[in-house]
Image (cartoon, rainbow over all chains, first blue to last red; front, side, top):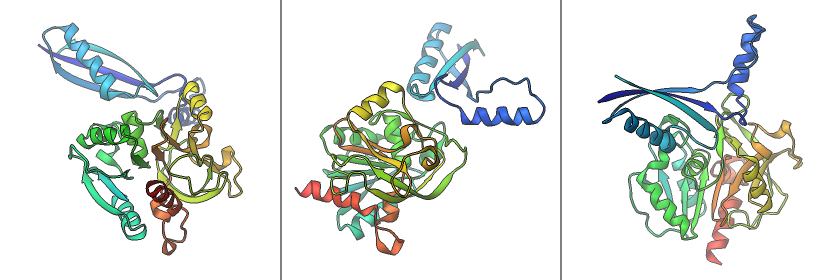
Length: 83
Length: 230
């Protein structure tokens, strides 16, 4: 079966995000004063073959832990669907 | 003294490191391509600066899986010396040979300039010929040198005197205005628990001979030479 994972990576809450702060200030200066905070992250689309959805999820989790994220500064979440 | 300079696709300070060690310091030096699985018996391995794998994903994140990095880990486990400069430091962090991680500079811009470094520790092979609390002038050139670690790791680094260099003023004062990239606790360089692995963002190889206007970086190589020959 073919699966597709959508992986979102963000900096941990405890880590300052200077890029997010800069975007926040830009939004404020463009008139979006109601913006409270912005965090900039990364998004991956990973296509993977697996016998079932559980196996696909397990593979994606391993990919995240091993390469896609750095657990010192980042956290991740993902969704796996057929396709 | 024998040294190896690792070369990754995208390394661009490898030739400078090679020149400083071979022509200036008269060491026996060889290049080692990142695909090599073993290292000849050398005293020192240098992970040079640059943009290994184009800094894709995260700085150093892909280079850390190069075959040569397994050999570097073995070399370090045997208590021999490793220095990672700039991108080399980033690779050591990703490889887990040093704790912590690098974030984008607080200014979000690439910074290329001379900075002042306070020598915070001389009880390690890289600065044993330097004066504690002395100040060095060494250039930085990076976009991601904003060192980060959590509170527990920071305390451990402080308790074990593993912070070797901090960004400072010319007079050696610490402060936000002397910290170019937002690095935690003004950290510019640190050593491993066994003190045989050093990671530093500034480039000592660029200030290793008088013709370059400064020889402050040479003192690190002199310390290593003294340590190895002792």
